[in-house]
Image (cartoon, rainbow, N blue to C red; front, side, top):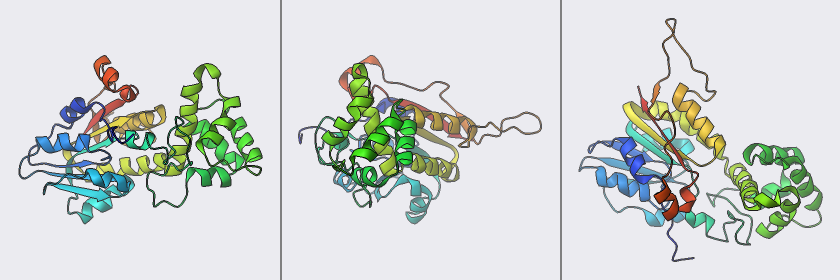
Length: 302
């Protein structure tokens, strides 16, 4: 496992092109991970350029770039505006978010992100966070679990799976990957077992880390910190994220309602540059199969 890369960045060339990097600009990568996108941004910067990269996982700090133009921000991107003020970068020329999970997380059995290995059900991106996936499965109500599996996992049997977990957890805690898989199997289509197990784990990961709430908070703040003409590039991996990002880039708000003035002119503060998302080509998918569900959308601040 130690020979595996921390992460292979998806849609790297398209992302860097979409950001339209100015050599003397200030840029933000809110999902540093293995640093692949950040290093590509740094290669485009001149001596006056600057890059601030966020990650809430202490493991990512080992990948930090040794360069005076680079700042590693140990924190969650939901606090984007406050961190940028703290580091004296209140306005920036471009923001990148790759919302995928790093290979490092999926490939470490101790983190519990993948159903491929047995191990503890942790799933915390930030190990300082109070509650793990095992804690959530032990304490959430049946209604809360059903909402999680149905909304974030898009599982047709989400309510029945929630009921089974609540019924069984008093007899034996649901605190390992194997235990969750065993409880899930009766409620997934065997013809689509890997896909639906991935959806179970996705739902739990999103809930544990408050991913949708963090994304909403982040999106709102991008409008405040982007300079006019600044670019926002976001890579999503599932339909919930992509729908939210698409609506926000199109309308400038989270509800996706396009507002117009008296003359019928659109009032969105963003100009969507990608009418359709940019997706990996066959060559990229062959070399990096985990990129197959990636979708890149780009908008410019008006």
